[in-house]
Structures are given as structure tokens and as C-alpha cells.
Length: 235
Length: 275
Image (tube, rainbow over all chains, first blue to last red; front, side, top):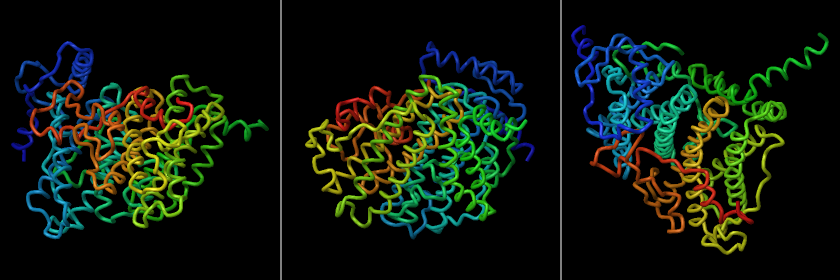
């Protein structure tokens, strides 16, 4: 356990940055990175060497990097779930449903990859996943779990939006959350076709608004799928 | 002291104008708590009360003085919601238009769009723009545009619905950053934004399309709707170019923004007298 923790606390600079180093977003990002790194007590040499992240698994919601790491945890969880589902799909899936699940898997992997590369040295590694209560051989169990993950993701992004300080991050969160909402609607339509459930009264209120959960609420619901605990600060 | 009962609620609303939004957020937390299903049900039943609170709050809100930019954005959103609400209200009340199996989804969408109009009008109060006259054939008032049979042909109706929903998602997304600092309004806008995305996904599925947008493909809509999907093939996110591989998934995974002027150009043919 100790060895594993040590291993996961080490993060490396992602050298795959194909970006315009001169633009203002980049400068602002680096400025915030430096502030975030200082806040986390990290010595970021920015030279491609490995750095040890003190206080790993700690999500500080007072800055954008805590929120990005929170999103990274959720996207990692989702991408692992759909990858596992698609490796050995339930036999009772209906025509066309595997394609939908494969598409969603690819989207979640893209989200995860994007967040991983954005966070670089500030990345908090995600613990191993566990799947309590999910029967991967059952269509109903898999789709129900998928629905819960997607609804939680939508509510999580919606709830975290007002905490984000950098405008570009808010826009990116918006680009991701609407795709999560498309996923949620599609999964819900698979569970109860051609009904009101795609945007059912259980998730959309009388004002026609989706849920918005505070990060602490989302983390508490997601925690049971992680083998080790996250510690949330600033919520 | 005798006027405490009179001033207290007003002060509360003035200090925190989007009280309805806060109640709704609390309502979400109640639902999130789960486990206590009776509480959840109570939260859902509060919906009516929330609408009433929004109506009460709006005068104070208008007096508190929203910045002009925020008012403009909310009126822009209101114009789109007017468009959608009237479209679905007309469609769902037109005899023999909506096939039986599409009835429940379209009724649900109509309910949400009508609620969005009500919410935005409540927030804007006397500064709300009035509802334009619409031409859902996209004929600019001629009633004979490219969607001439929109209320006679369910396929056309669904196509126009997809056009409105996919546009709506991009429109809200494009304004989110402009609402930063106005947290209650931003939170409400985000919560509407994801509902529009649910609508878009469902309408697309009813049209036998994928629920997500691949590259900048128009999902079976006529060429006239191309501006709705312009730029959806973007693969440069924030400061990062996405990998060359698997472009379909890359573009599906990120919905893109539209500017206000791009959106207004798209909806212009649906509004009599222009925008």
C-alpha cells in the first residue's frame, strides 16, 4: 500500500504540449499554475523532471486546479467504467447499444486525456476503481450505473461552474458538460425508450433546470468507486 | 421596528436577488442527498413554490439593477426560449402532427421551454423583451420558408426541433464566461444549458441520429442549417491541440460555442421583422 501510494504520488511533466506558447491563455495558465503549485507546496521545476506532490488525493476547491482535478477524477472513473463495459459487454444489450457505449467510452477518454495534459505537474493521481453493486453482465445494471455516472457528472460540472476563475476553463467545462448531458439523455432513453425520462422530473426541476451539486456532494457519492479516499478542502 | 416584517424579506432579496436560484440549488442538494426519498419528493413538490418565489423576486431584482451586459445576455436567452416555447406549444397542440410515440418526449421538452421563459421573465422583470412574432417555416414572415410543412409533417417538426436545440446548447455555452461574477445567474444558465443538451440528444435520437455531433456534420438537416454546426469540428481545446487520431470522437467529445451574432443570424429567418 505504502509503495503504491508513493508511486502514484509521483507525476511527470507531459511533454506532449503542442500549443502556442505565446498566447495570453497560456501565460495566464502558467501564472495560475505557479500559484497553484505554490499553494500545494510543490516544487515545480517545469523542466520535465519528476516532482513529488505533497498532499496527494487532496482536492482544494478554492482554486481552479482543485476543480480540474475533481473533473479529472470523474472523467477517469467514467472512462474506466465504459472501457470495462466494452471489453466484455452484457449479452443482453440490444441492437445498436454497444455502439453508443463505445462512443461514450471514447468521449470520456478524450475528456480524461485533455484534463491530464492540462494539469501536468498539478495532477492528483486517481486511485484504483472499485465497482460496488454493479453487475457487468447485466444490461440493466450497466445502464443504470451509466445513468448515475452521467447524471452525477452533469450535476457536478453545473455545481462547480461558479467556482471557476479562469474564463477559458469555464468555457471548456461547458463544452464537456453538454456532452455529458447528451450521454445522460441517451442512456436514459435506452433504459426507458421514448419516454420523458431523458430529462425526467427526477433530475430536471419545475423551472426546467438540471441538478447542480456542490463538489462535496458529488465527491461523497463518487467516493465508493475509489479504493482510496479523496480529501476535499475549501468546500 | 413595526416595519420589520415588511422590510426584512425585501432586504433579503436585494442582498441576494436570485433567491429562486438558491432555493433551486438547495432543492438539488436535497435530491442529491437521496436516501431520504420523502425529502426528495418534498423537494420536487417545492417546484411550484419556486416559480412563485421567482415571480415575487423579480421586481426587487430589477430594482437592484442588473448590469446592462447581463440584461442583454438574459434577453438574448429569453428570445431563444420564446422561440422554442412557442414552437413546441404550437406543435404539441396541432392535431395529427406528433406521432403517438414522440408525444411524451416533446411534451417534456415543451414543459421545460415554457418554464425557461417564465424563469427569465421573472429575473428580468420590466426589462424583459417582449415576444417576437415567429415564422417557424424560416420564411422571415412569408410563412413559406424551407420548413413550409413544419406543422404538417412530423419529420420536419423534429428537424426544426433539432436545429433549435443544438443551437440553444451552443448559445448558452457561448455566454457562460460573460456571466462570471454573477453566480446565481451563471448557475441557473448552466443548469438550463445542460437541459437543452438533453433535449438535443433526445430529438437527435428520435431522428435516428447519434445524440452527439460528429465533426461539423449537420445530422440529417438541410444545407441551410450548416451555420448551426459551423466550427463543431474544432480539435484545439484551451491551449492544447488534440491528437490526430480518432477525429470523430475528438469532435463529439467537445461541444463548441457560438457567438451571440452567429446565433442571431441562425434564428433571423424564424423571426418576423428580423432581430
